[in-house]
Length: 71
Image (tube, rainbow, N blue to C red; front, side):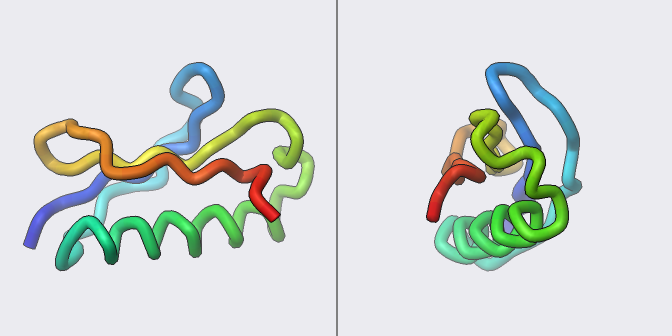
């Protein structure tokens, strides 16, 4: 299974949220949505500051970017 890396970013790298082996890009996107929702609940001070969850595959290619400012 491919490896996907999850990072909290603003205009720069902020925090590494680890890597996971997942079935495909769609599953990685779902996991990013879950992580973003978790951060919105546990760290509400990040909302409105343009933070996002960035997901890349094992080759470093971008898979998705999920803004924390989503409703």
